[in-house]
Amino acid sequence: MASTRRLAAILAADMVGYSRLMGLDEAGTVQALREHRDAGDPLIAEHGGRVFKTTGDGVLIEFGSVVGAVECALALQRLAAERNAAVASERRMEWRVGVHLGDVLIEGDDILGDGVNIAARLEGIADPNGICISEDAFRQVRGKVEAEFADLGEQSLKNIARPLRIYRVGSSSATRQAVSPAGALLLPDKPSIGVLPFANMSGDPEQEYFADGIVEDIITLLSRYPLLFVIARNSSFTYKGRSVDVKQVGRELGVRYALEGSVRKAGNRVRITAQLVEAEAGNHVWAERYDRDLADIFGLQDEITEAVTIAIAPAIADAERQRAMRKPPGSLDAWAAYQRGLWHFSKSTPNDNTLAESFFQQAVDLDPNFAGGYTGLAYAQTRAAGVYGTRTLAEIWDATFALARRAVTLDGNDAEGRTCLDGGITTVRSRKSSRLW
Figure 1 (tube, rainbow, N blue to C red):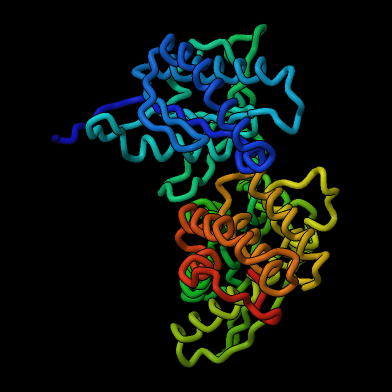
Figure 2: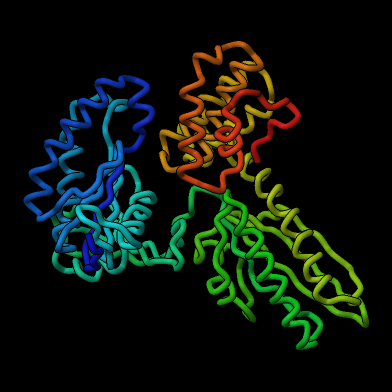
């Protein structure tokens, strides 16, 4: 059957904490999910939608109208709220929803392409019980849907080439189409960094290219770390030649950390300084100075880039763990719960390993699309069986292998998850090599 293309509104929805609910009551959760979908089917049909794919606890729906898609999303969230009213908080089914208007590829009954992928990514950043839509969708519904829209500004979505402007949607019975200003961007769950243009302090125009080259290479290398969210060059270079306040940069770019630096030449030597700042508080996390000869400018550029990059990643990891440890357990997001799990995991005691399991499970429940939570949980369970004997390999084998497989499915660059998966989890890492990142 030949493939065809068309414009479509895609709604992606996914349940929050599905793994946790299944752990509490597998049969009851499956039945409740089935009943919820049955109750939602008339709303989908009423708004002109067609379910073209279900993914366990998720669903993808096609609409011919963006207005229909957004109104359906609001109706489905109201339905969820009504069904949850009489349910204990720990057993409630809450949903994240994303809506995008884009070009899609039709293959039989299935729909593929960026239009679908973007809707799924929007769902992934929505709050529990929340709805996020793209700017393309917003243009079509503004003034036509009785809802409030909050402009979240441009944000980078995983595996989507260009940043997209995103809007949060909420029900409104009193106001048609109120739009709040963009203001500060929301911080991603994982650590985020903007690498600002290094200042050329020498007055030599040739050093401008050298400084820019270092920054571009640092951005490229940092982007290879799967657990870092790195702002693209085009965004960070808008601050070139400007005197900036790092706190303002953090708000405008939506990053937790900013790297800034300078280049100064004197004769045949060059001095490069770099400092990593926690943008919200303005605290210095790391700083270093490099004095080098200018014998080989490209070799020097590579050397400085590698040295800075290698130093930054551990500095951020340490700062993130300290930040997570300062938070009350009840206020943790998925990333902070993961960091708390890593901290206990590194202590290498049976009690700490049990606590690590609980925090990794919390990370999975808070964000089912975060690979790190699954990887951490797989290793903690394996250590419980292989080192401490608090579980048996037979008891955890299938579950641990499934966790590793899920981590690799979510993030093909997750080396720890792939190690679990490829090795079949037949051995447990020694305590000296147990650090996940």
